[in-house]
Amino acid sequence: MPVEAWVVQSPGGVETMEWRHYSDLIPKGHEVLVRHTVVGVSYIDVFHRNGVYPAPKPLVPGTEATGIVEAVGPNVKGFKEGDRIVYATLPVGSYGTKRLIHERYLIKIPDYLDDEPVAACFLRGLTAHYLLTRLVLIMPGSIVLVHAAAGGLGQILCQWASAGGAMVIGTVGSDHKIAHAKKAGCHAVINYTKYPRFSEIVMGITKGEGVKVVYDGVGKATFYESLKCLSSLGLMASIGEPSGLIDNFEVAHLAARSLFLSRPTVYMYKADRNELVLSASEVFTRMEQGIIRPHIHQILPIAQVAKAHKDLEARKVIGQQVLKVS
Image (tube, rainbow, N blue to C red; front, side, top):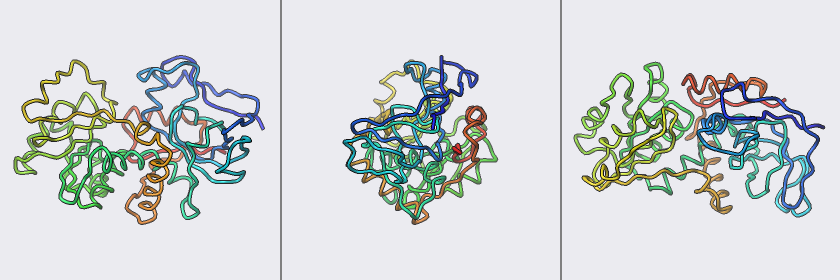
């Protein structure tokens, strides 16, 4: 059966993605041939498409998917034909019907979980895991600020942190997203477009103390105001820049209150196989317990990937969206 995939020939808009046909793939060594069932969509894909994240072209975008093992290379020990799997990793290549991928990136999906919620949650669940337990340990009573709290990652961060006893302050970009952020566990929600000096509200909520951590997945529009929200010795975690990259940042901004700044990525934190397996188990457990509750904004056929990207760039997506592969 031939392989079909979306291919980006050069950086640009959604029109740069073309549906291409290839001959079938044969796994070698530790490679596994995966037939995709559901593909996740994130802003990482947009940045690979438009060139914000440079990558050799042509490329097949996408870093996350669920699927079924169709064949394995001669050195593969942990997987067999028919296994249900999920992955969330670089290199890119999930925007297609099939792909070859090294077995070290694959995780078996428990029988009690369906493909759609796993595809929607896995990358974001792994991200929330390292942000809350590895980058810094969020304890009961910790106060954190989560930007884009109604988004795919934001909702999972809020759900996980609040379930662990943290006080979560969320921000959103429009009023109609406030209810979704509150449902995800936010103690208070601020529309940062309506209140650009949102640090004043945060300081009011925290009685002048500030927050232990800011998780900023917005970027340029919120970055400098977010620094004002931190308590002394607080941590600014810059985890995404859909509103624009941070430029001309002066490290001296951190000095007055001995602040910390990190630009972490899930791919580095989960590069170790043992860590990936452990993290995946914790994500699946929290999904089973109902702590992580995916809000799937829309399920589109993979043929409508352009709509998925346009909706993401227009900030229309609440929660997650996925592409179904027939």
